[in-house]
Amino acid sequence: MSTVAQQQGIRRRFPRQYPGLESDIQPVPVNSRYTPPLKNIELLEVAHIFSRLECRILQGSAQVLQNHTLNEDQREPDEQQRLIRLEKADRDLLDVHGGKYQFSVGYLKDRELLREWGFAAAVHRELFRQDPTSNDQENYQIATASAKGLEKLASPLPAALKLAAEKGSLDVLTRNAIGDKYLFLDAIINLLHEKLSTNRQLPTWESISENLRELSSKASVSKVTTTDENIVLNLYVPRLMELLLIYYRALRLSL
Image 1 (cartoon, rainbow, N blue to C red):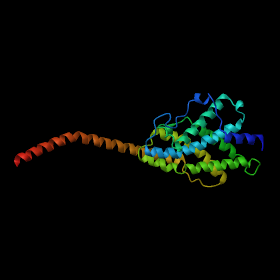
Image 2 (spheres, helix red, strand yellow):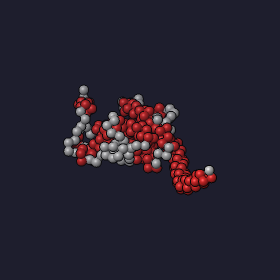
Image 3 (tube, rainbow, N blue to C red):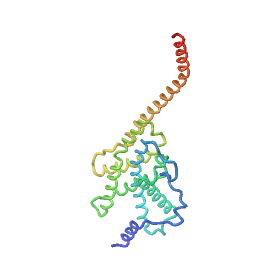
Image 4 (cartoon, rainbow, N blue to C red):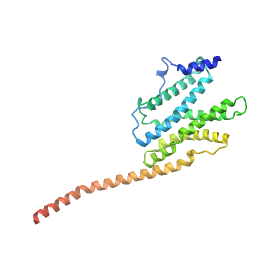
């Protein structure tokens, strides 16, 4: 086994620890360890689907950064901090999947990890440039398997987003944050089907975003109308009770 392969094997078996350094890095608040938990039922479903995608993105970014400089001492401080931060975010999401914590109330609005989605798209683009029949075919195969995995994980996401929009749960900040990441996912999946000469099944963000906006708008109008009706009814309730009392008294006097 080569020295590089041995180092990679050791890294997989014994995750790196950074005594005194990890605690100094501000974590990405993805779970309820740092902020109040997300309670909305529809958004929880979106978060469960989306977080699995995000974990895959973070793990891929970490692997690329690790392989770029196998010797930790050769890494630039910014690169080292970035690696620690995204690995911690991945662990925090896995803690949610394992039931230790809940999602943070602001998880789906988060933009701090957007950079890693763009990085993943750039890495896939570079790997797909490799000739599948050349000596670099392993890189091409890695990119293909990775993109297929992301597409599979994302398959239930459009339906979950649609339901959240219909229920009025998909606010503008959440929709935009998810959309910006989804666009990088689109780039990866488009590359996959372009290389394989196959038809894409997962809807693009462009094809669903307008519908999500319309559904959210209708849900908001419906909520406002219902609230107004309740206010009007509450205004009339005391008067109705007064009239009923007068009628009841008049009825008793007539008996």
